[in-house]
Image (tube, rainbow, N blue to C red; front, side):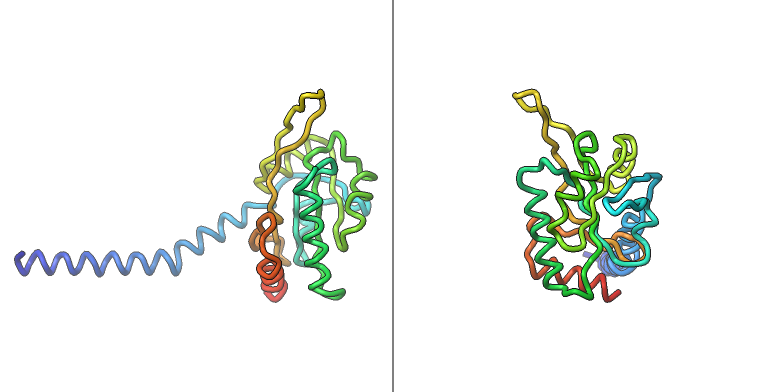
Length: 195
């Protein structure tokens, strides 16, 4: 290998290392932040079980969490509500999180049904609306939801199972995965609340 080739190879390695540092320190975080800014905003107008309007502006002002589910859910939704109840207990009375349970099944989930369904989980407010407005919210939050026919003529719903955390500015902070460890979930919430 000639000196010239060796010098070129070394400079190429230096350039690649510098490019990697720039990517990791500046470009990737900006990309992740820009994607986070697109989750949640949208032209949806829903109603909460407390009688208030739920729009993208609802998420501003205080940290909050959004979870999509439905009242006929056999496992994921009641399990997640149970997890939320334990997080709220750990956070304590003055630090509890605002949580919105948005239905993916507006045809069956009336406001009254949602109110009863979430009533046992502290700080959780149900959210519903017309199928058209729910579809807008599902798109805005980038949630997967689809109706699955059952053999008996009824149906169930497949849906995303993450709890989405939003900071006080209404921007996505990060998700909590379905049945994520208790300590990790609470640590995420506390980091968000401290920000």
